Length: 113
Image (cartoon, rainbow, N blue to C red; front, side, top):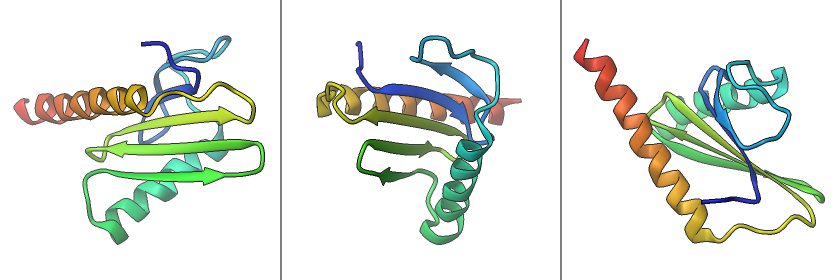
């Protein structure tokens, strides 16, 4: 599936696992402001929402940012600029379902050790 949104998949510490952005390296850390955003949302997820997974969004006049945290280990950032083609809700939902399964596999693998 090809999405128009910029997608970054990282752990909750901001270490990039994969992405869909040209010129952006894998295996690096996100910028400090994005790492801080993920950390803050993860603390809210844990302490206020008391759930394993949660979604957060931020919207300005020109940009939209969605953060999905799965199984308290995986962060998926979706970034859309104003004027960019909008992804279908079905495509976004399919990606998020796959990332949820991936996060669950990470948890299962760590519990087996």
